[in-house]
Amino acid sequence: MAAGCGGASSDGKPAAVASVASVASSSAAPAADPQAAEKTAVLTAYDAMAAAETWSYANAVLDPELEKHATDKALADIKATLFWYQRRGTVMKGATVHSPRVGSLDTVGDTWRASITDCVDSSAHDKVDKASGKPVTAPSGPRCHVVTSTAQRTKTGPWQVYTSTIERDRTNDRARPHMLTRPRPTGLALALAAGLLLAHAAPALADGGGVVCPPRELDCDITAQDPGKPLPGKPGQRPGKTGGDGPSCAIYGTPVPCSTPDMGVLSLTDSCY
Image (tube, rainbow, N blue to C red; front, side, top):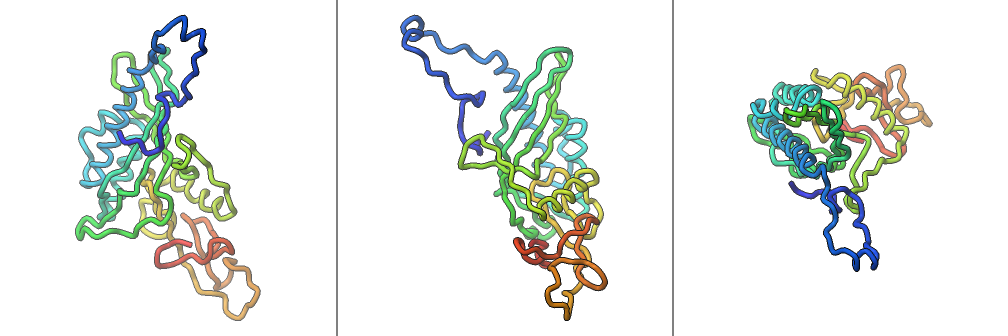
């Protein structure tokens, strides 16, 4: 498992500094984490799910091993994303780099539960046309993503991942290990976030404009609907204002500015500002 988000102790806490008295009185090693074995089992299941997911997207067919490690919404989201790729004749080539950590682990009761936070680097994981092998439009945004997941098991069963969500409003900061940052929202960012929330609720499986973003695609593409033409003969018109025969852009059916002072004009070529 590659370490993509820096290094730290296994539990993310700084090592305690022993006092002179404690060193003099005892040379025993620190107590081992009593949950270490179970945390390893959680991460083993998560890694197996990630490997099966990557294989599925690369081969345009569901890996038969996937259902051993993923279930419920996690499995449904992977199947929906695979279907999205199949319909468009695209596959994913390369590999993602994962750095998962177990955040919480509850082994009380009949059902054990764990939470996982992963920093995923998709820099070497690209979408290509299955028939030609040619790359599809490369994403222009950050290629490092925060993914939060939950896993469960019964006392006698294996760990399985139940949910796995790409936190699209968060990024990981590689300059500061294990620091997850949340970018400051702008008006445009809030509009885009609204569209992304709609995409989560109903993945964009239909062709056309909007948020082209199945639930498990790390690098989202955003396209414009009915961009129209610039408003002629109206100096001083605010960029992006809609109405009449003027520009009209939308994200998954929600109107957004076709241009903004800070981001520029929405391009019809690469669907980016």
